[in-house]
Image (tube, rainbow, N blue to C red; front, side, top):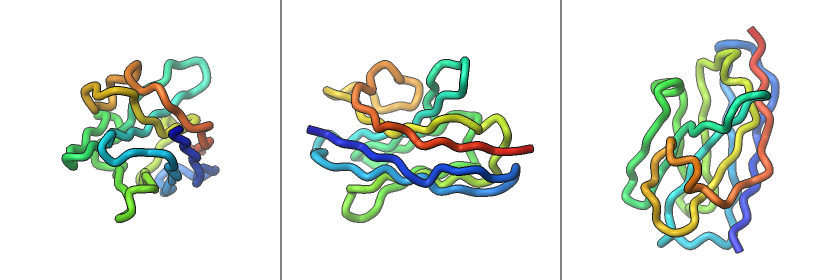
Length: 125
């Protein structure tokens, strides 16, 4: 059974940086599609970035050039380096992986069926 645990959230001033981590267990490398998502109060959950086993990475336009998704060499930790944070980046951040083999892109939110518990990011302006 896949288990995902996020950490690294916190409070930061606008322009600051945070690095989120997602510890993976029970995950098969052959099923490699991982993503970061976020949800602000009163808003729908939205995709932030995804990475697949071919190394293809996709970013939402709102974070492109500021956020970087990556993994450690053992492929059991997913990271999201967030730079140049803005107030509108404040949200609960989740890592997730889909079941099956859907297209691994950040906007395919409905395909991601396995989620962590989330880590809160607050950016003050």
